Length: 105
Image 1 (cartoon, rainbow, N blue to C red):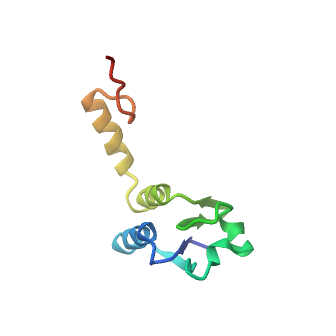
Image 2: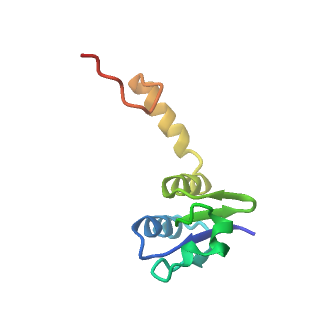
Image 3: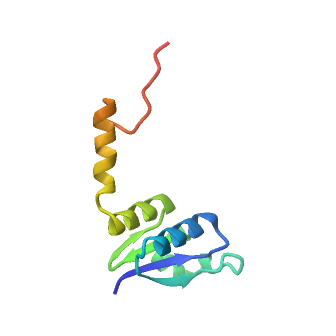
């Protein structure tokens, strides 16, 4: 079984995940969770995401429940080299962390 996406396309983060997957040709099985009907609050959906929020991505036994991490995981499926680009940028700029530097007063 491949990727399973639990989305409601009324949600902007869900649309971003959906569009990204379609644009990059990442195969997935779509499970619609209708927020207006409260389907995200059901016990059945709580088995997928105990936080009862969408989007959620399931890949076998592994589940991601935050939209930014879902996009990052899908990016790795589409093009694993994007992570190397981020580390190269940090090395060129002399940054070892993605956190903003602390200002001293």
